[in-house]
Every structure is written in structure tokens, then in C-alpha cells.
Length: 123
Image (tube, rainbow, N blue to C red; front, side):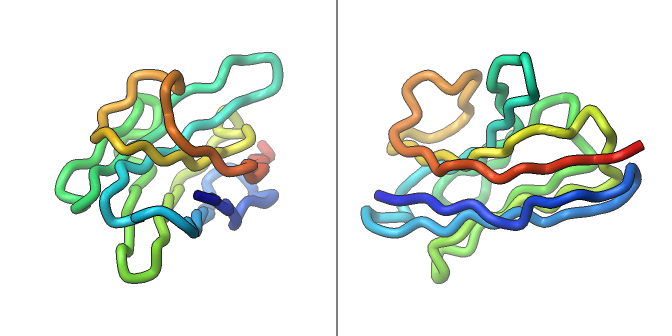
């Protein structure tokens, strides 16, 4: 199973970005999916998660109301729409897949990982 994240970049505070994660191999429609992020000098942290049907989504308190995670099982892709971005959102964002359903309180045990995409928010 391979995960390829894209969509990162440099944006000013208050701006928006949409991350995508394309999953190949495996059975995408059965996986729970998640986004994690890691800022310089910090541990990787959970951002959001979605179950296989997209009926259940989960968000870290720090992004609730600003980020929206979705998935398109026909395209084997998950998305993270990030609005009202803040400098504190600056990090490498990773998508991950797991055969178990969310929530995922931490990154331990996630079955598959992508390489990450850099998001930089300037003040």
C-alpha cells in the first residue's frame, strides 16, 4: 500500500490550502484514514481522521472549525481542506491508513504512511 500526499505549500495567515492523499494498493474503501502533522522540534500529532464510509470524522481541538477532512472512495483519495490557517499550523503533514477504524489518539500502530507534504504559514 502506498500513500502519496500533495498540496502543501506556502500561504499567508488566514489563507487556505487543500491537501490530497492518493492511496494505491490494498483496499482503500475499507481503511480508516488520518492526517497527522509534525512541526520542527515537536512530536507528530493527530490532526483528523475519517472512517471508511466518511460518516464519522474526528479532529484535534486545535483545528476544529477550520479543517475539514473528506474522502472519495471512487478516487482512492482523502482530502484535508484547511481554512483560516495560522502560523502554528506550519508542519509537515502526513496521511496515514489503518485497517482499524478511528479515532486515532496517536500515531502508534497506523498501518501505512505517506511521505508527507510541507505546509508553511507565514504571519
